[in-house]
Length: 186
Figure 1 (spheres, helix red, strand yellow):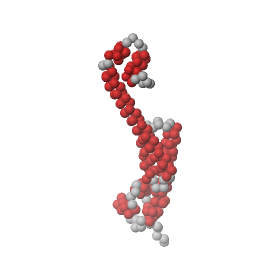
Figure 2 (cartoon, helix red, strand yellow):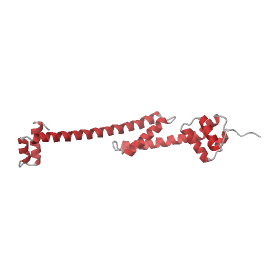
Figure 3 (cartoon, one colour):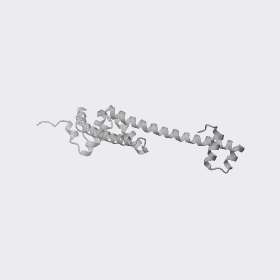
């Protein structure tokens, strides 16, 4: 009678144990360490590291391809949505996009074009965030400088006369602008 192949030991493991072994291997656990873990956790002795290579080919590789396919589909969906509404990322979307970019970057066999597309979206989102921060800073600086200027000019008798005069607000703003910024203030 023919002795069963040693790699069938791993393929005959219960589904939950196969899933655990696949998780270990997909997370980067080396075969020699996985052999020790299988012996300790499952009570299964595996002599040859080739056994793990065959397990990888039959179990892990299809799982990895499925995971990569899902990541690409998600990235494509995010990219499509981003192209429909550029500049309208919310923080959760940006976080998910960063996670997908990381997964693509470490995924063996990832298409470099897909990785580049996802990273370019992450960089666009970061640029938009920085632009918004700069706009907020500029707005705050403008408001502060305007208030400082107002205080300086309010001490000026001419500015007080304009502010308390009978003109409409639009006319007052026009005259104050000319007084504060010069004739070509617009």
